[in-house]
Length: 434
Image (spheres, one colour):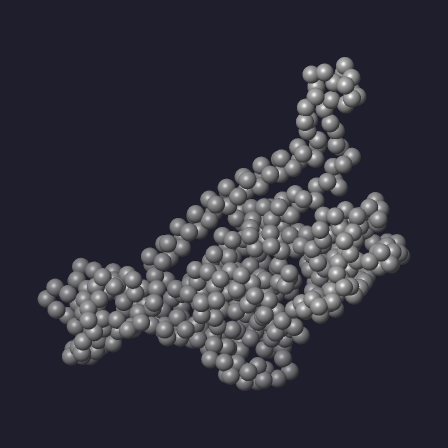
């Protein structure tokens, strides 16, 4: 593994910590790591990313350890990768962090949507890197010599094997994008159905391996695969969960985030990440035991900012407190923030408090509203009771007047029936039934 520490580059992690994370990625991909090298640079070398002296050092290390793969901690340009492989010689491949993450995603994609998204990201990454693979196959139509008789009738642009391959990949990319648009439309229809059912959605987000799948299993019995590996699960899972007050919410486990997340993946997973933008609440899971927990949380926040979901309420769950020497310290830290809860998803500790907090956030920002609904609008009357808080209810000859509070997402639905707020003299519904 090779990493460069660029002067003035204030990354989220120190170069040593970033290499440790790269090691975990390599292990997840089934790669044995035998050595590493680092270098401090003013800026990446234009030809080889690292300096010539460091290239020679890495080459010697590869020969000494009989390594057949070099992984760089940053994304290499096609030129860097091509030059480095030429220097290292046959039998030694050069990969970067982006290619490694894409490979892990390809291993763990299980659904058709996930497979399409990863394949698209891989092709878009590989397209500008094809030259080194096909130079030995390049051929040109009309090679009978300048002006020679053999060229008559054969002159033209011809097509190299490289051009054929690029064209085929572009066609495949176009096909994959069309297929994903179909997936996106299908997912949108599901979201519309959920919106009609007016079931709130909670999107579980967090750094990879923070415990998102374990939490979903704990609150719903989802049976999602749980492994102590980065990106062990990739495809999103949604489960219906009963909240303490009796209301119901949909919890969606989304793809894990990581620092230096490849831009190709962010683009390819647009349809999946839209689930985050459409959520009523984001549940941010933080592995409180990780030495870089603060930096990991910031990486997730930066990615969420890129997705333009800053206005969605966020609850932070400090997970894995069972592994702390003093779990009470995490609980005390959680009490300092009104939207933070200390939990252990594996031990089911603090889960009730977390669900209560989710319910509180979902319904604390309720909008006061008074509406007059016809008796025939039984679905809306039931919806007001199920999703809102009814303070007073008054039965009239043809209508029911409800006064209470509703989630903001429902206000537009009830606005046509809104009446001017006025004191209601009827007794609360529970007394009225007596």
